[in-house]
Length: 233
Image (tube, rainbow, N blue to C red; front, side, top):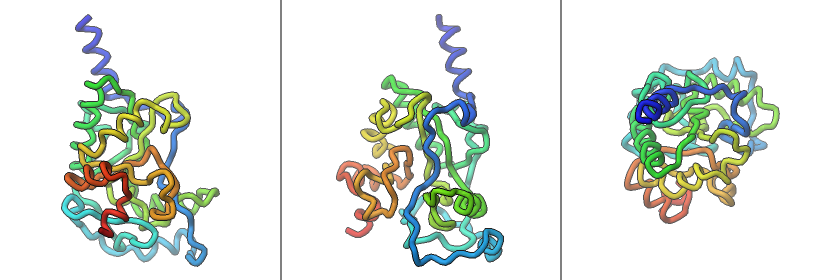
């Protein structure tokens, strides 16, 4: 029995699932587009990218939204590829997802405890995106829900999207229930709350989690507020 359990843990610790194998994967950061934003072509939009500006994103709590974009050429520090972290306690939808190391360490600890609590099957679907990748998503997504380049939390390397195998509505899963109750203990917040679109500019996203670090995360989650509300105190 011990051998079988050991094999199962080893097998899933490095398992990568294709998006076609996952039902109901919610993708990307969604935001209502402002009517007064004037955009050029995709090629023109990315032509002004400055030299990379390395910034330590683990100290200050960054507020990223349509009114608070990242500086041009912003580049997170210490990005790592999640697929290469073989002893992780979560699964991946694809092999090219990256995130800041401090975020990985916090999320892996969090998902490890979730497994101990009997909740597993977390699948990370998205992490860091470059400005160019966000631009391509923005200009090719027909439903107008992708964030403007420079205003997506995915460009910070501090956010990830997650789902669970076979569940079309992540908000109804045991995985979501566990995360919503415990993520604040590990430095994470549920970034886009239900009913808070008027504050965040973004519809409810039960799959999107942002690393802000302790003690900020615990205060935000315990109080049931948005990052915008916390930073305006």
